[in-house]
Amino acid sequence: MILTGKEARNALRMALEQFSDVVQRCQNIQDGNFSSADFDLFQTAGRTCIKQGDSAQVLSIVIDEKNKNIIRCMGWNLLEPLVKVLLKKEDKNLPHCHAILTHLLEVCSPKELLVGLLEQIEEPHSDFIAETIILLLKPLQSVLLKLGRKKASSVGMALSTLLSQVAKLPVPLSKEQEEDDVFGLCRCCLELLGFVRPFVDEIKANARGDRGLPRENELRVEILKFCMKSLCEPLLEVQLKDADTLEKSPLRDFATGILVILNGIGESLPDLLGRSILRKREVPGFLEEEVRYPKESLASMAHLLFVQHIAMDIFPAVLSPVFVMQCNMEYIEVLLSRTEESRLQKGLELYEKTLVRIENNSLPVDLLDLKTFFTVPEHVIKVMTLSPVQNLRTKGLSVFQLSIDKLNMEAKYKFFRCMLKTSGHAGVEGYIIKNIKNQIDFTMKPGNGNEWFLGKHLLPLLRQVLSLPQGPETDLLRYLDRIMESLNLLRYLLIRDKEWENETGIWTELYKIEDNYLKPLRTGLNMSRAHYEAELKRTKEHKDNPTESKSPVCTISVDNEKIPNMTPEMQTQVLRSALFTFDLIESVLARIEEVAETKGRL
Image 1 (cartoon, rainbow, N blue to C red):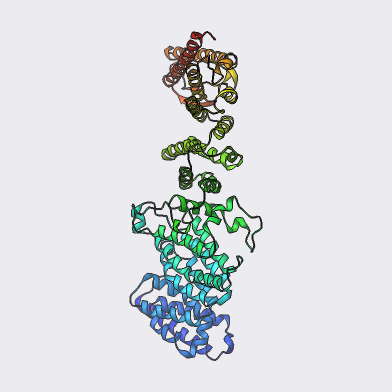
Image 2 (cartoon, one colour; image 1 turned 90 degrees about the vertical axis):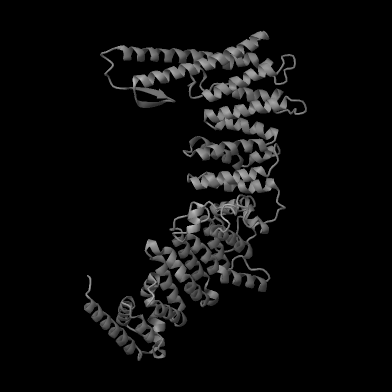
């Protein structure tokens, strides 16, 4: 309902009278034993006065010494209208409203003010989340500091509420968005650092006085929870800009501040990093370890340290690259097991930065006994093969190769055998076989000899490579990448390894390869060619028959899945492409036979 000017003035006068009456009536009530009706009338009349612009009169009543006891008990009910006026920033009422709020902070019960302030922080319109947080952080901090030594749970509740609201703010994606900070996330993050500073200082002071603060100190635990949650949201969501891109980055400053706080409250960054491999089963205190140190938060910390190089001045450089890698693998797995592009990007970046610190051909085989040294590459393979984002697929392939390069020869050998067995993707298997070829080539050069890619160890690997998953009935198109790479490897070995030297053992193994691989492959090739030629002939006849040319479109199966809505012209093109692929396999087979026949072995 919209009031006329006169009606509004009458309503305001009535509200002011009611407000004055209830305050005067309550002046004679002892010990704050006010009725619920008194509370309701004080709240509704006071709210109307403030909203209608008569905050000056309210201020005069609030600061009157005779009303101190009333305001101490009821004043916090005025927070909601005060906050709304202060957010609108109406010049006429701002000074009075600020003065009322300041007085309430001085005289009201800290516990009631805490509840009232948190209610206002939790309930803003989505357009005012950042403004509400920034407006109320100082008052909230003041209230918490008045709670004395028993404030830890209240500090935790406040920080949890604040971070829940901050998490609703859109994350800036570009340099320009971070600079403009339209939604206020950057300002909120920096203000939060100032908000927690006195509590962090108190923890440090207590630590000095107690010669080391007990880890179960409640305030310390609440600040730790704040840091861990901040590492996850918003810091795991944002792509921080380096100093060259954005000289003054609020989000980078926030990340630095969080790590500095962790270090300041006695959480050693190296110890946090190493929790994944040095995890203690019993942690003193009232928080379980997975709650106290969430893996996603530690993964975010690792990314900040090793990719963004944040707070490295308080991180010692004495940790070996291999130890750092052992620590980071679990965090990399956490990031790569997600589906969000930002998580995958950070997982690949952390994996890459962890690997580049390590010398090529140096990681020992016993590291492969650790579960993550297989599960992480498996996640990378999923990114390489399934991600719809081209940049992620390209990055994934690059990091996958880098991870292979760091393994020593025995570890490469074991890794290749495992990947051929578990990857389940012909393209990946083909890539592994190409790597095997490169390792054999490296090993056969003077001075590079090793036992893993020659002779007795190589032969079991070759038998694994030179095989068809389903024998002659293998889908040759589905396994094309694997088949072509395996044939190229076989041809390379027959050309590179002299029969009288037989360093790889290929010449003594050739008759088995002929029986177990080449013959089934030829059989499968003939069967597939005959099938596709028959299909091509049928499609051509179907197309040429005038009575059938108007029939519905055809379907064709690729990799055991039917692709509908394929016209006869499209089907003809697919079938001819398949036959061309069979010709390609046939040509490589013929070259292999030519090499072998030249040496009289086939």
